[in-house]
Image 1: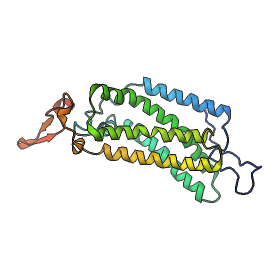
Image 2: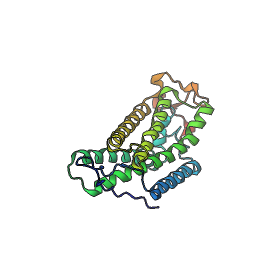
Image 3: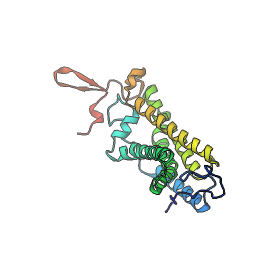
Image 4: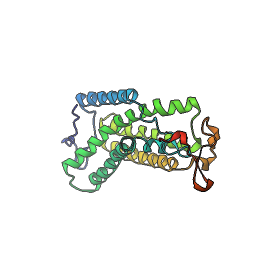
Length: 247
């Protein structure tokens, strides 16, 4: 399915300095583009819902003393890292960099504007697909089964999922459904990129934190009590058990 990523032409009726910035929509997108992005969104959401569980080993990939966020990225290497971390972050970083070029680079190459627009159109559908998958296989099971590993675990996962809101916002701006004038669209575009990057870093910081630092104990979750791995000389390494390792 082709998505129109070509930059919009400036509105010739506008006065000097009022021409619409290519790559940001100043009016509603053409109906075929709206339909195409809608279909892509539904398709990725369906894939996220029906695809095999990619979080199956998230609880054991890095031992019991890590968050499910880190376990998710460590499991099924390199695919989980590419899908859940690299893809959304690359889209956001692409938007941030090309935004700066468009704003401060003077005469911006057409391909830069096109890249900015493509990343904006893909951001929302991609994050919706990821969120649907994680809601089904991570959030709901951990909530109903009492499997959360304390505050750090919850904050890491929810901050990551909250990043869906600004990413969807970026796509709506590109489609002309938000920020119908240049100034408003530009402000929303920059804000959404910034909010996503902040949320992504919050998720990473809490995700890399040992859950016990914020008061969680392995015994709080059934099946994790006393999970230790015997080391030479009788020492133990907390957070690992032979049951969670492949022999």
